Length: 309
Image (cartoon, rainbow, N blue to C red; front, side):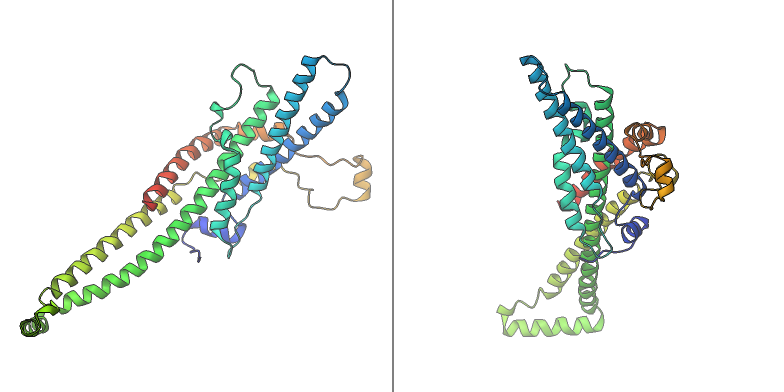
């Protein structure tokens, strides 16, 4: 359906394909670094497999491999979801549907306190992975709820516009029933009804008034829902500053490097690391953002529930 341009967030969809563009880019770099770490661990486990370990050692290795494989799938799911865009004439419904599928797979990271084996102390690498996936999952949830709220807001706006026209129509009929013309039509209806009583013309004015009141109530209800949704959209947590992106991205990723630069650097370009992404998420602004996002998502879900009831 048609998407309206009502606030700054709508312009973000037109220009960048979604909200939180800077944070999305930063988390993409962190997830790419996490995939590199997992690939290195896979190589190490492949090299060390089958070197005369015990039966219990083999079982532990299999368990670790399964754990690494599961985390790798989650990281790839989060990375794919953050790469989803909603262009200006794209379908926000499709954007919500695709993100909802990713969120169903990342549900354990929405509330990380309920995840994991309590008897097993996680390593630093596991803690960093969980933190990265937690922030990424909350970002995906925010983008999904924001797109869904805008879809509902646009529909409420269309329905309210149609109800406003219907309200004006019935208001015209109510006003028409008053004054000298109303008295004339009422007298005419009484005469016609005395001859043809089955027509039920005596209560025409009351029926018109009831239609007007019913349409007015529906119109006002749509306006209330529209106002609640727009208020939630305007209360969305502040987006990440562009300067924060420089600490976790490589400016040369999309540029061609000269042969001399490759020779001097040994063919290796610096890549953002998982530690740098973790350090970014542990900053005070981002810790405040994750708390505000949790509260905002709860309000967004409530607004959606009230809207569809």
